[in-house]
Amino acid sequence: MKQFRLDQLEAERTAHNGAYLRFLRERTMSAGLYALNVGDTDSQGPQRQDVLNFVVSGHAEVTVGGETTRVARGSIVYVPAHTPCKFHHITEDLRVMVIFSPPEG
Image 1 (cartoon, rainbow, N blue to C red):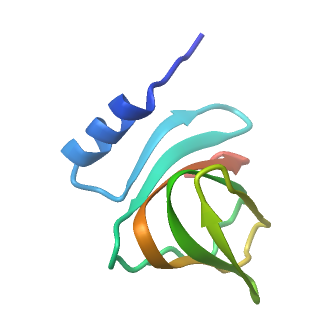
Image 2 (image 1 turned 180 degrees about the horizontal axis):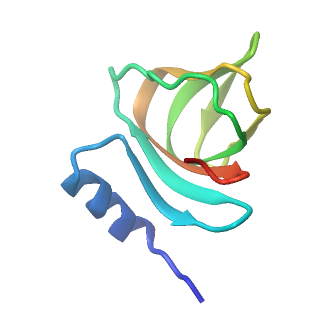
């Protein structure tokens, strides 16, 4: 069994000075923690995989393709492979668990 704690993942991500920490990679999927703070710019490009974004904390808007919506803790956003996705108008530090299928890199 593999088990993770959000506070430990956040500490590890912070220690590595990065916005993204991949914490799981399996044959059919991978998962990571993505962090954007108020004022940050989301620099991600379209992914080659299908992506499920689960907002763990924070408030922002997200644009997927041509559609924009507000997201907050508990929001889940599916992004099909090769579709542009950007978080923006971040009003509270954002933490997102990101699940890729098939696994990233």
